[in-house]
Image (cartoon, rainbow over all chains, first blue to last red; front, top):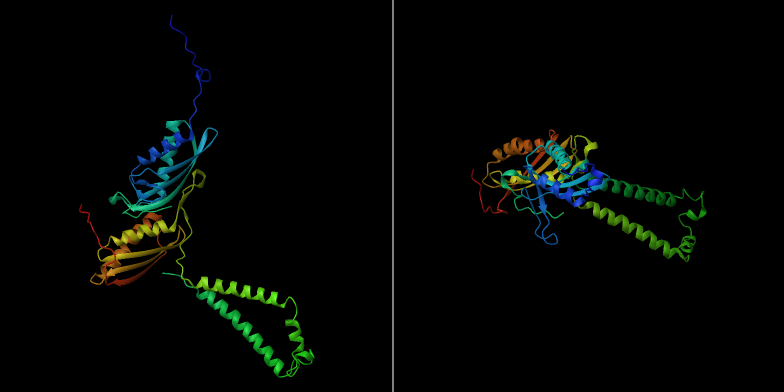
Amino acid sequence: MAPILDDAPARRGGLTIADKVVERTAGQVLKDLPGVGGTSSGLFGIGASSSLDTRPSVDVTLSGRSCTLAVQLGLAYPTPIVEATEHVRSTLSHEVERLTGVTVRQVDISVRWLAPESSGANRGRNRLQ
Amino acid sequence: MRRTAAAANRTGLIILGLIALIIGLAVLAIGFGLTAPVDPALEAGADLGPVASVLALPYSALIAVVVALILAIIGLRWLSVQVPRKDFAKPFRMQADARTGLTTVNAEVIAEAVAADLESTDGVSDATVILRGTARSPELLIHVDADERADIDAIIAEVAERAAGNAAMALGAPLSAVALEIGIARTRSRRQRSVSVQ
Protein backbone atom coordinates (compact mmCIF):
# COMPACT_ATOMS: atom_id res chain seq x y z
CA MET A 1 0.00 0.00 0.00
CA ALA A 2 1.43 3.34 -1.07
CA PRO A 3 2.07 5.88 1.70
CA ILE A 4 -0.45 8.71 1.91
CA LEU A 5 1.28 12.04 1.27
CA ASP A 6 0.27 14.99 3.34
CA ASP A 7 -0.50 17.68 0.79
CA ALA A 8 -1.15 20.59 3.19
CA PRO A 9 1.52 23.21 2.36
CA ALA A 10 1.91 24.39 5.96
CA ARG A 11 2.78 20.89 7.12
CA ARG A 12 5.24 20.20 4.27
CA GLY A 13 7.56 23.02 5.38
CA GLY A 14 8.12 26.70 4.87
CA LEU A 15 9.72 28.56 2.00
CA THR A 16 11.69 31.71 2.73
CA ILE A 17 12.93 33.93 -0.09
CA ALA A 18 15.65 36.44 0.77
CA ASP A 19 15.55 39.94 -0.69
CA LYS A 20 18.83 39.18 -2.48
CA VAL A 21 17.05 36.44 -4.43
CA VAL A 22 14.39 38.88 -5.60
CA GLU A 23 17.14 41.37 -6.40
CA ARG A 24 19.17 38.92 -8.48
CA THR A 25 16.04 37.66 -10.23
CA ALA A 26 15.02 41.20 -11.14
CA GLY A 27 18.55 41.96 -12.32
CA GLN A 28 18.58 38.91 -14.57
CA VAL A 29 15.17 39.79 -16.01
CA LEU A 30 16.48 43.28 -16.81
CA LYS A 31 19.70 41.93 -18.35
CA ASP A 32 17.65 39.87 -20.79
CA LEU A 33 15.73 42.92 -21.99
CA PRO A 34 17.10 44.38 -25.23
CA GLY A 35 18.17 48.03 -25.17
CA VAL A 36 18.55 48.08 -21.37
CA GLY A 37 21.92 48.29 -19.62
CA GLY A 38 23.63 49.19 -16.40
CA THR A 39 26.77 50.60 -14.89
CA SER A 40 29.60 48.45 -13.56
CA SER A 41 30.88 49.74 -10.25
CA GLY A 42 34.64 49.36 -10.84
CA LEU A 43 37.12 49.38 -7.97
CA PHE A 44 36.06 52.00 -5.40
CA GLY A 45 34.19 53.69 -8.25
CA ILE A 46 37.35 53.93 -10.37
CA GLY A 47 36.93 52.44 -13.81
CA ALA A 48 33.15 52.40 -13.64
CA SER A 49 31.64 52.06 -17.06
CA SER A 50 28.17 52.07 -18.55
CA SER A 51 27.13 49.55 -21.14
CA LEU A 52 24.07 47.92 -22.61
CA ASP A 53 25.73 44.59 -21.78
CA THR A 54 25.94 45.31 -18.04
CA ARG A 55 23.26 44.23 -15.59
CA PRO A 56 21.24 47.17 -14.22
CA SER A 57 21.28 47.60 -10.45
CA VAL A 58 18.16 46.81 -8.45
CA ASP A 59 17.28 47.55 -4.83
CA VAL A 60 14.47 45.58 -3.24
CA THR A 61 12.32 46.64 -0.32
CA LEU A 62 10.25 43.75 0.99
CA SER A 63 7.00 44.36 2.79
CA GLY A 64 4.99 41.30 3.76
CA ARG A 65 4.55 39.19 0.63
CA SER A 66 5.08 42.11 -1.72
CA CYS A 67 8.01 44.27 -2.65
CA THR A 68 9.03 47.58 -4.18
CA LEU A 69 11.86 47.70 -6.68
CA ALA A 70 14.19 50.64 -7.30
CA VAL A 71 16.03 50.23 -10.58
CA GLN A 72 18.95 52.21 -11.97
CA LEU A 73 19.44 51.57 -15.64
CA GLY A 74 20.57 52.94 -18.97
CA LEU A 75 18.67 52.86 -22.23
CA ALA A 76 19.53 52.80 -25.89
CA TYR A 77 19.25 56.20 -27.57
CA PRO A 78 17.08 57.25 -29.29
CA THR A 79 14.26 55.34 -27.62
CA PRO A 80 10.95 56.74 -26.34
CA ILE A 81 11.82 56.82 -22.64
CA VAL A 82 8.26 56.58 -21.34
CA GLU A 83 7.40 53.56 -23.49
CA ALA A 84 10.72 51.83 -22.81
CA THR A 85 10.47 52.25 -19.05
CA GLU A 86 6.82 51.19 -18.99
CA HIS A 87 7.83 48.04 -20.84
CA VAL A 88 10.63 47.46 -18.29
CA ARG A 89 8.18 48.04 -15.43
CA SER A 90 5.49 45.68 -16.68
CA THR A 91 7.96 42.95 -17.68
CA LEU A 92 9.79 43.19 -14.38
CA SER A 93 6.61 43.09 -12.31
CA HIS A 94 5.26 40.11 -14.20
CA GLU A 95 8.46 38.07 -14.35
CA VAL A 96 9.56 38.67 -10.75
CA GLU A 97 6.12 37.68 -9.53
CA ARG A 98 6.09 34.60 -11.75
CA LEU A 99 9.57 33.44 -10.76
CA THR A 100 9.56 34.23 -7.04
CA GLY A 101 5.91 34.43 -6.05
CA VAL A 102 6.51 37.87 -4.51
CA THR A 103 4.05 40.53 -5.62
CA VAL A 104 5.69 43.64 -7.07
CA ARG A 105 3.77 46.72 -5.97
CA GLN A 106 5.88 49.47 -7.52
CA VAL A 107 8.93 49.76 -9.73
CA ASP A 108 10.77 53.07 -9.43
CA ILE A 109 13.12 53.60 -12.36
CA SER A 110 16.00 56.03 -12.56
CA VAL A 111 17.44 56.39 -16.05
CA ARG A 112 21.17 57.11 -15.48
CA TRP A 113 22.40 57.26 -19.05
CA LEU A 114 21.33 57.00 -22.67
CA ALA A 115 23.68 55.54 -25.27
CA PRO A 116 23.50 54.72 -28.97
CA GLU A 117 22.41 51.10 -29.34
CA SER A 118 24.84 50.48 -32.19
CA SER A 119 27.83 51.15 -29.96
CA GLY A 120 26.88 48.47 -27.44
CA ALA A 121 28.48 50.64 -24.81
CA ASN A 122 28.39 54.19 -23.66
CA ARG A 123 31.13 55.26 -26.04
CA GLY A 124 33.70 55.25 -23.29
CA ARG A 125 31.89 57.95 -21.32
CA ASN A 126 32.34 56.66 -17.85
CA ARG A 127 29.88 58.00 -15.37
CA LEU A 128 30.58 57.90 -11.67
CA GLN A 129 27.39 58.31 -9.75
CA MET B 1 24.21 78.94 -23.47
CA ARG B 2 24.81 80.12 -19.93
CA ARG B 3 22.57 82.27 -17.82
CA THR B 4 24.21 85.35 -16.38
CA ALA B 5 23.21 87.51 -13.45
CA ALA B 6 21.75 90.45 -15.37
CA ALA B 7 18.54 90.55 -13.33
CA ALA B 8 20.40 90.25 -10.01
CA ASN B 9 22.77 93.02 -11.07
CA ARG B 10 19.88 95.28 -12.05
CA THR B 11 18.20 94.69 -8.69
CA GLY B 12 21.43 95.38 -6.79
CA LEU B 13 22.12 98.54 -8.76
CA ILE B 14 18.57 99.80 -8.17
CA ILE B 15 18.93 99.24 -4.41
CA LEU B 16 22.37 100.93 -4.30
CA GLY B 17 21.06 103.79 -6.44
CA LEU B 18 18.10 104.34 -4.13
CA ILE B 19 20.35 104.32 -1.04
CA ALA B 20 22.75 106.83 -2.69
CA LEU B 21 19.81 108.99 -3.76
CA ILE B 22 18.35 109.06 -0.23
CA ILE B 23 21.76 109.90 1.29
CA GLY B 24 22.33 112.61 -1.33
CA LEU B 25 18.91 114.18 -0.72
CA ALA B 26 19.50 114.08 3.05
CA VAL B 27 22.88 115.82 2.66
CA LEU B 28 21.31 118.44 0.40
CA ALA B 29 18.50 119.01 2.89
CA ILE B 30 21.03 119.43 5.73
CA GLY B 31 23.15 121.73 3.57
CA PHE B 32 20.22 124.00 2.74
CA GLY B 33 19.17 124.06 6.38
CA LEU B 34 15.84 122.37 5.71
CA THR B 35 16.29 119.93 8.58
CA ALA B 36 17.19 122.54 11.23
CA PRO B 37 13.55 123.08 12.30
CA VAL B 38 13.19 119.33 12.88
CA ASP B 39 16.39 118.91 14.89
CA PRO B 40 18.92 121.70 15.60
CA ALA B 41 21.70 119.09 15.55
CA LEU B 42 21.03 118.61 11.84
CA GLU B 43 21.95 122.19 10.99
CA ALA B 44 24.71 122.63 8.37
CA GLY B 45 27.13 124.33 10.74
CA ALA B 46 26.24 122.21 13.78
CA ASP B 47 28.85 120.63 15.97
CA LEU B 48 29.51 116.94 15.19
CA GLY B 49 29.74 116.19 18.88
CA PRO B 50 26.51 114.11 19.13
CA VAL B 51 27.61 111.96 16.16
CA ALA B 52 31.08 111.51 17.60
CA SER B 53 29.60 110.54 20.96
CA VAL B 54 27.54 107.78 19.30
CA LEU B 55 30.67 106.42 17.60
CA ALA B 56 32.52 106.48 20.90
CA LEU B 57 30.06 104.11 22.61
CA PRO B 58 31.58 100.79 23.85
CA TYR B 59 29.47 98.66 21.47
CA SER B 60 30.12 100.84 18.39
CA ALA B 61 33.03 98.67 17.28
CA LEU B 62 30.85 95.56 17.57
CA ILE B 63 28.11 97.17 15.49
CA ALA B 64 30.71 98.17 12.90
CA VAL B 65 31.99 94.58 12.74
CA VAL B 66 28.45 93.19 12.34
CA VAL B 67 27.65 95.71 9.61
CA ALA B 68 30.94 94.87 7.87
CA LEU B 69 30.13 91.16 8.03
CA ILE B 70 26.67 91.73 6.56
CA LEU B 71 28.17 93.80 3.76
CA ALA B 72 30.80 91.11 3.16
CA ILE B 73 28.11 88.42 2.91
CA ILE B 74 26.11 90.56 0.48
CA GLY B 75 29.28 91.13 -1.54
CA LEU B 76 30.16 87.42 -1.66
CA ARG B 77 26.59 86.56 -2.60
CA TRP B 78 26.74 89.09 -5.42
CA LEU B 79 30.10 87.66 -6.55
CA SER B 80 28.78 84.08 -6.59
CA VAL B 81 25.79 85.14 -8.67
CA GLN B 82 28.14 86.59 -11.29
CA VAL B 83 29.43 83.13 -12.24
CA PRO B 84 27.53 82.13 -15.38
CA ARG B 85 25.49 78.98 -14.77
CA LYS B 86 23.95 76.40 -17.06
CA ASP B 87 20.60 76.07 -15.32
CA PHE B 88 19.57 72.58 -16.35
CA ALA B 89 15.95 71.62 -16.01
CA LYS B 90 14.85 69.77 -12.88
CA PRO B 91 14.80 65.96 -13.12
CA PHE B 92 12.01 64.86 -15.43
CA ARG B 93 9.26 62.60 -14.12
CA MET B 94 8.29 60.42 -17.06
CA GLN B 95 6.03 57.66 -15.76
CA ALA B 96 2.67 56.82 -17.31
CA ASP B 97 1.05 56.06 -13.95
CA ALA B 98 2.71 57.07 -10.67
CA ARG B 99 0.81 54.35 -8.78
CA THR B 100 2.92 51.64 -10.44
CA GLY B 101 6.19 53.51 -9.87
CA LEU B 102 8.11 56.63 -10.76
CA THR B 103 10.48 57.15 -13.67
CA THR B 104 13.13 59.82 -13.17
CA VAL B 105 15.55 61.15 -15.76
CA ASN B 106 18.02 63.94 -15.12
CA ALA B 107 18.15 66.63 -17.78
CA GLU B 108 21.94 66.17 -18.02
CA VAL B 109 21.43 62.55 -19.07
CA ILE B 110 19.32 63.53 -22.05
CA ALA B 111 21.60 66.46 -22.87
CA GLU B 112 24.65 64.18 -22.91
CA ALA B 113 22.88 61.75 -25.23
CA VAL B 114 21.91 64.56 -27.62
CA ALA B 115 25.50 65.86 -27.53
CA ALA B 116 26.87 62.39 -28.32
CA ASP B 117 24.33 62.12 -31.13
CA LEU B 118 25.49 65.47 -32.54
CA GLU B 119 29.16 64.54 -32.29
CA SER B 120 28.49 61.64 -34.66
CA THR B 121 27.55 64.20 -37.34
CA ASP B 122 30.05 64.83 -40.13
CA GLY B 123 32.01 68.03 -39.54
CA VAL B 124 31.09 68.35 -35.85
CA SER B 125 34.08 68.11 -33.53
CA ASP B 126 32.35 68.91 -30.25
CA ALA B 127 28.86 69.61 -28.97
CA THR B 128 27.44 70.96 -25.73
CA VAL B 129 23.74 70.66 -25.00
CA ILE B 130 21.56 72.09 -22.24
CA LEU B 131 18.02 70.86 -21.70
CA ARG B 132 15.59 73.26 -20.09
CA GLY B 133 11.85 73.44 -19.61
CA THR B 134 9.65 70.55 -18.56
CA ALA B 135 9.01 67.02 -19.80
CA ARG B 136 5.95 68.29 -21.70
CA SER B 137 7.61 71.42 -23.01
CA PRO B 138 11.34 70.76 -23.36
CA GLU B 139 13.81 73.26 -24.80
CA LEU B 140 17.21 72.45 -26.26
CA LEU B 141 20.16 74.82 -26.27
CA ILE B 142 22.88 73.50 -28.49
CA HIS B 143 26.41 74.69 -29.04
CA VAL B 144 28.28 72.94 -31.82
CA ASP B 145 31.95 73.32 -32.69
CA ALA B 146 32.20 72.64 -36.41
CA ASP B 147 35.27 71.94 -38.45
CA GLU B 148 36.25 75.02 -40.42
CA ARG B 149 35.78 73.13 -43.68
CA ALA B 150 32.42 71.65 -42.69
CA ASP B 151 29.19 72.31 -44.57
CA ILE B 152 27.39 74.56 -42.08
CA ASP B 153 24.03 74.26 -43.88
CA ALA B 154 24.26 70.49 -43.67
CA ILE B 155 25.05 70.69 -39.96
CA ILE B 156 22.07 72.97 -39.34
CA ALA B 157 19.80 70.61 -41.27
CA GLU B 158 21.19 67.64 -39.36
CA VAL B 159 20.56 69.34 -36.01
CA ALA B 160 17.06 70.46 -36.98
CA GLU B 161 15.94 67.17 -38.49
CA ARG B 162 17.85 64.30 -36.95
CA ALA B 163 19.21 65.40 -33.56
CA ALA B 164 16.14 67.41 -32.55
CA GLY B 165 13.87 64.66 -33.88
CA ASN B 166 15.70 62.01 -31.86
CA ALA B 167 15.50 64.16 -28.73
CA ALA B 168 11.76 64.72 -29.22
CA MET B 169 11.24 60.99 -29.75
CA ALA B 170 13.19 60.13 -26.58
CA LEU B 171 11.29 62.70 -24.56
CA GLY B 172 7.94 61.76 -26.07
CA ALA B 173 7.06 65.43 -26.56
CA PRO B 174 7.71 68.00 -29.28
CA LEU B 175 10.49 70.46 -28.50
CA SER B 176 9.07 73.88 -27.72
CA ALA B 177 12.33 75.59 -28.72
CA VAL B 178 15.72 74.69 -30.18
CA ALA B 179 18.54 77.23 -30.05
CA LEU B 180 21.67 76.49 -32.05
CA GLU B 181 25.02 78.22 -31.73
CA ILE B 182 27.81 77.21 -34.08
CA GLY B 183 31.48 77.84 -33.39
CA ILE B 184 34.34 77.11 -35.72
CA ALA B 185 36.94 74.73 -34.33
CA ARG B 186 40.28 75.52 -35.98
CA THR B 187 42.02 72.69 -34.15
CA ARG B 188 40.41 69.33 -33.72
CA SER B 189 39.83 68.82 -30.02
CA ARG B 190 38.95 65.16 -30.39
CA ARG B 191 40.69 62.82 -32.77
CA GLN B 192 38.54 59.96 -34.00
CA ARG B 193 40.35 56.66 -33.63
CA SER B 194 37.83 54.27 -35.15
CA VAL B 195 34.91 54.15 -37.54
CA SER B 196 31.89 51.83 -37.64
CA VAL B 197 30.98 50.55 -41.10
CA GLN B 198 27.69 48.69 -41.46
